[in-house]
Length: 429
Image (cartoon, rainbow, N blue to C red; front, side):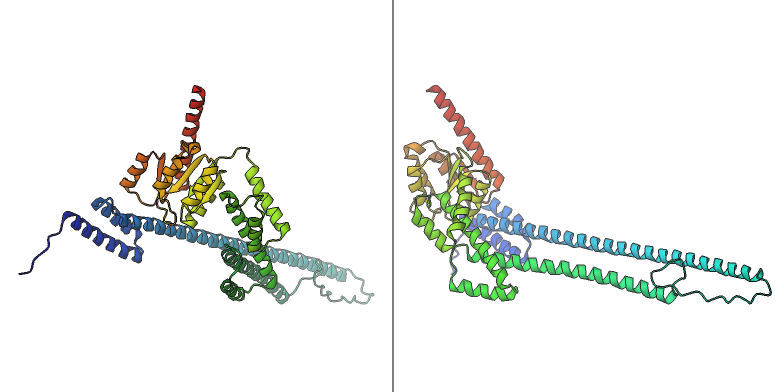
């Protein structure tokens, strides 16, 4: 007799969630994102703490944003095409109006010439009637055919007028086609240069090119028809922009300072920057750093390098002085000697010896950072993690994905509250 194993309630929940997530996966592959989101909502109702559900939810959020961006780009393209069509129609309309004006002017000119010829004929007849009989008859010369471009003497033939009109129409069409061709050529030229520049920026992102990257660029150079001059110019732009970005990040993290010549020299060598170029670019960064007397300094820690780069740039655009670190170990070395105005850290730091919670506790042991605002980041909306962070005394908790506005509002709120508390403490003293 076969023995049936009865499922526990928890096993039953897992089974239901698994079935829902299978449907979600199929819907994602089919591109039915709205239905997939509804399925995720149903899964969260079944098991609110299942981490796989939140992983799918983050994936759907990313795909939804990409889909909306694609729709927006497509709409922009259609609007540009419609604007170009309207411009072309307006150009053709103006050309037709001009052609019609020329036709009417020619008709009026011919009518004027015809009337003048009729008047001369009448004068000749009258002179013939009143001429004395003894005088020999006056020989009237035929009217002289007018030269092209002269008016008031004789009209062009109908064939010549039609020929001129056809030539004018052909010239207008030729100019219109030439304008379109030049615009299309300019667009294609600009597009290929932008694409090649983007590939150069990717290749130079981390410095000197590898043989594989050089080989790829040779192929792309041929593919996009890049000339030697264009290649040299775009390469230098990519080197300078990449060096500027690397220098800004290194300066912000504290790994490069004006008195550490070896690190600066290594950075210049990596990006093949001349001393003159580096002096100019580094001066720009130093000017940014010194533009504010007392800039607000934020320390941020996250082992996702791309995410760290994006968030750091967002905070710098909001005029914060940002120190970014990919490990809690590097961040702790900096914090032992420095005092930022606020600390932001991811909870799950897989590449560090200290996880988020351990890092927080170590920071709080430092006397000069005992009361500095501390914000946790995480990609999991797990109530247990949130509760643990709050029990430790963390000031706030922001879950990924989040908007720039949400993060900036949280930072501003915590800084404002900390400053008020500091003012109150100083008054009591």
